Image (cartoon, rainbow, N blue to C red; front, side, top):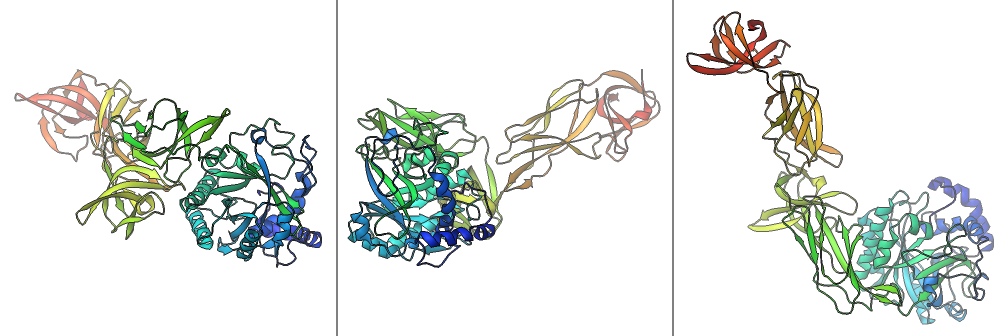
Amino acid sequence: MRVTLERRKYAGLKAVLLGAALLILAFAGTVHAQEADWDDPDYVKMMNRAEEEEEAVDSNQASSSSDANPYTGNTYTHASSLASADIVYGVDVSKWQADIDWEGVKADGIDFAIIRIGYSTISSGTLSEDPYFEQNLKEAKAAGVAVGVYYFSQATTLAEAKAEANYTLELLGDTTLTCPVVFDWETASGYRNENVSGSKATSICQTFCDIVEAAGYTSMIYANYTDLTTWLDADTLAASYKIWIARYNTTTWTAKETSDWDYSWIYSYWQYSSSGQVDGISGNADVNFYYDTTYGIVDSSLVDTVTGVKVKSNSSTSELTISFTALDDVVGYEIWRSSSYDGTYKKIKTLKGTTSYTNTGRTEGREYYYKVRAYITVDGVKVYGKFSSIAYAYTAKSNSYKVVTTKADAHVRLHAGSYKTLVTVAKGTALSVQAITSDADGVRWYRVKTTVDGETVSGYINSKYATVKVKQVTSVKASKVTAKTITLSWAAQGGVTGYLIYRSDSRNGTYKKVGKVSAGTTTWKDSGLNTYTRYYYKIRAYSRVNGTNTYGSYSSIATLGTTKTNYKAKTTSAVTLRQYAGTSYTKLTTIPKGKAVRVYYRTKDKSGKTWYYVRVTLNGKVYKGYVSGSYIKKT
């Protein structure tokens, strides 16, 4: 359970709660057979409960027609959405209950038990088996108690969640279960996962449950009320998995909230107290309700799974069309989308009477992931089928680009994340990028295509092992000029984050950054300039990935001017006409003294002296170039 008291760091937590631990040992009898273990999250959780349980059952004793609970003596008000459910009593246990008399537990009316199979340590995340797991599993089954298992997670990444799921399956072997395999997601001060974001935690839950489901087990997520309503994306999780809510109260809401139970998600299990008294268990016990529903809101067996899901990129760069095979006797379909294969999926559209939908407004050059589920209604309540398999495609992009591997033996994988390696490529290998995506941790991945031994391979490479090959910006020109503005334009480049614009008053002078635009923009307006004056611009593109910028080379210098003037002048002495402003540039010709010229722009050389851009005709030939302002006089 997320600690709602003052948050403490792990070392401080141990010291502060030591007195509480001794008090618990004196009267609870639940941990007397086990040595204190501050690296076990369940142990730390028990130390918190001494104070939490005092605050849990408050004055919110809502009226109920139910008899007093046999394990706590309180009466409980159940959600109106579960009014038709049969309520089944159960417990959850770990090594901290030590030796349990399961015959006595069954005789006391307990019909199910969720048994801890393992946990990850707080200090290092080490995968650990509960030493009482096999004993509890065997003896509970023998006593006729339905069983499931839970794993107390400390995962901070998807890779760790996968390891926890695979470890759970390894411990289960070929064990059959009646109740779900539970992912116990809790955090408190000092836990390894205390700084994991809500979106990351949601993805971690999904990762564990998907692996468990793929192995043929029913998965479930355990979390407390606060985390389910303010931290985790409960709507998304409940759409695919069973939910087990923990809240130590006589209702699943408080007096400060609404008595009209109106969560958009629903739970199947409720852990309502950690101080239940159950025959056969020494000391306090975690006690739970299971809601057995005929048309359970999370029961997907009544609705077929959608198949034939396809995603097609349209000619428009921002559209993807999703289609699938129609099902008989369903009311409608829901389409869910994510920006990463393992990420959090959000519902984007409900369809009725059609099996096709065009998703507009997507980002160019990005890959998107979709899954679809059908639903029916039973007594006004939606009943959903399971989600389809994931289908994905990327939006079209206007130009292609490449990434270059930066480390030896870089892996191109089946999907973005810790998936099967399709091919390994050497450092410095250039790969054509088809689209960008991300893993559930938010790390950018490139969908790439390469040829190995004559075979074309498409897969994904981590941006930590490849960098965008940023090209030189080309085609810099003025798309519009006024007396005091110049609007620049240039050719777009794929895969970049944006463009930086630099300007100087002289061709070989100091260039300063004057503008910055994002990748989707290839124009920029320079304002506040001098009239009939030439300026010098160069632009470079950059790609920012993982906090680091990769820059392309500068464009060729573009000489651009505000609206040109047009007046007559003459030379005051013989003067050299040069290609650019400055005595070091190529000589085009010599203009004799007193020769008429046409002046269009002024500019400066590197030393700050004024030059004019002029046109002159000599011996029937037209010349254009720059002359020093010291030798020109307006006529």
